Length: 84
Image (cartoon, rainbow, N blue to C red):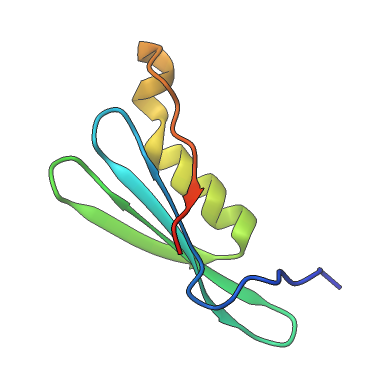
């Protein structure tokens, strides 16, 4: 069985890229054997999207939304910081 985290529901991480867009990942709920994490991405033009899954999937999807053009341009990659 997968080990559950010890974070409280509502725990939140955020990363902002150099273009002003940002990602958020938060723990939405905990069942007996599954944690539901949600993530969202806010583009610099104000549009956004939200999805959910386990921590690994949410982290990877969010990070991939936040960095695509930054790798090519050589700009600093964002780091997730816990804010709640």
